[in-house]
Length: 246
Image 1 (spheres, rainbow, N blue to C red):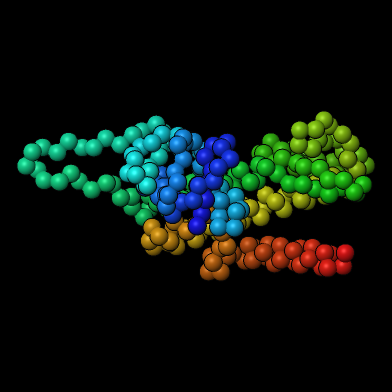
Image 2 (image 1 turned 120 degrees about the vertical axis):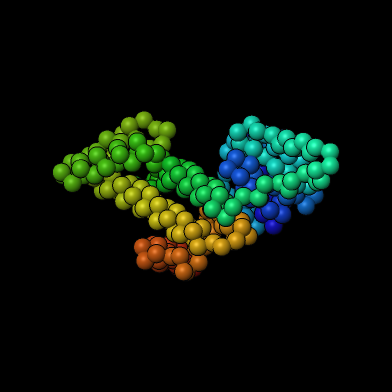
């Protein structure tokens, strides 16, 4: 069962399901204990891996006990007035498949951007490791550093995340650029494959199970993604081999 964390609170809450019901409204179904306050929703998979964070869901749109609807635009549900003799009020709005797909694509895009911007740790030639953020500005800066490396500069000025500028050797600078570009390219490719998966969904239930970090079904894996997955498996195998020999 998936779990969520609200805002900066430490408590985790189990959920039976979470899904968008419109562009700005998210439905959460709880089996038992529920949060008392609302805010950004961080979703964790069954094994405790952080999947994604949905921001801005601070307003209770509608409360149905164990089922809560939250909005990210401050809107709240207003029951339509039913004139006497007109029968039961209309059923709650059910989003179309296209609306659910669009909402899921936005969720995946936001998660991809966050992970890319978080950046990478890069081992350096002196045995240390530095972390490098990868916002759009950082990526553009690294393209410029590639020109310096290619031109034959022996030392290139750059800075790790939150650190002052320092000189990196050409070897280390190339390692930083290579790791950064791999990180950006992989997640861009993975995000594209998930979007193909979303486009192939034919029911709301199929869309609900998709999250950033899920294994993309082979039918939606591009040739490029398959190449990346092969590289990742090889790197993981190498890491395991290293553990076996220690």
